Image 1 (cartoon, one colour):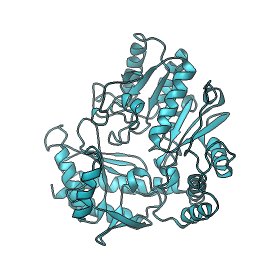
Image 2: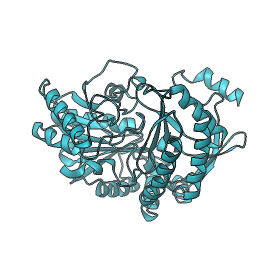
Image 3: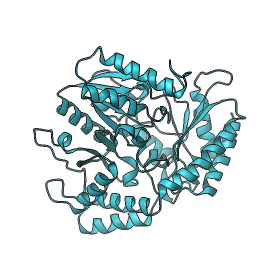
Length: 426
């Protein structure tokens, strides 16, 4: 392992972070578990950053990939592609967007990049509204709309970005307001902001902020925003890279918690749909998707092998009601973790919905983020056989819990037990 770590450091950029003081090499997985090169078995509560959505080595997906690889792996979008059309048809129908068109990419970053291209092209404006504490990917355009400085390495940008209040419920100037007044204050802030700008192309927002620490506004905020946006002709882009496919339990898409005024104009997705394969994409109304007046294709987006995986994975998700499982098991896990946190002074808040749970850590007796504590719990959880993630705002002090959606009640209890010991070790 030390040899591989040294080789990694010799050829991989310093800014490609590794978890743990002694990084692990994951060699294989099955169900909700993975194994490292030393033979240690872990319960996986992070799923490759919310990407292994259904299960590791899911037989249905493995079979679909193997059979497609035996026929043809790649052809590009210059040719008709049956698996791509089949997956696009299913996603268009599930999206809630009328007269929907689907464009496939290889990642969430590229999906959001495409959404920005469509919105700015359709509106003939390079002004974008984004949420504070947000994250939308690592491309040049995506980092320029990311409202989290830890993940935005440059201030240079092809876009003019303005940041709106509302993505974080329990911090900031409106945190002490009741939900209805919180929404009113955020809408007033949006109205005021628009009074100081030229035409804006779009608002991009994660219904639940992923890298930002699984924070979210009260339900209905983006529906209230939508009334303002519609008056100005501004598009709404819902970044569903982490919230899509039923992970929040209550809804199939995160935007549905804010759907009183209809679906978003543009929806982006990635991560879970491929169950580890490189799949991302954009859904938009035909008039928006077809607004580009120059040629555009994708060499690798929508490849036959990744589309075959996506079709099989989505079928499994729907046939086994994994959204319902996320709601039921996630609800049990959330309450279990809140019970544990009540007697741990370092825990400020346990939040989330479905199997998307954040545990925010602070220095006891203060409201000050404690990234060292988060790093310590991450290490202690791994030593106990549990893999979790980190994230959150200006300081990485939130533990991110997002297991595959097929998690069982027994596995949820097992993970909670390990997390309890790790938290009490602080």
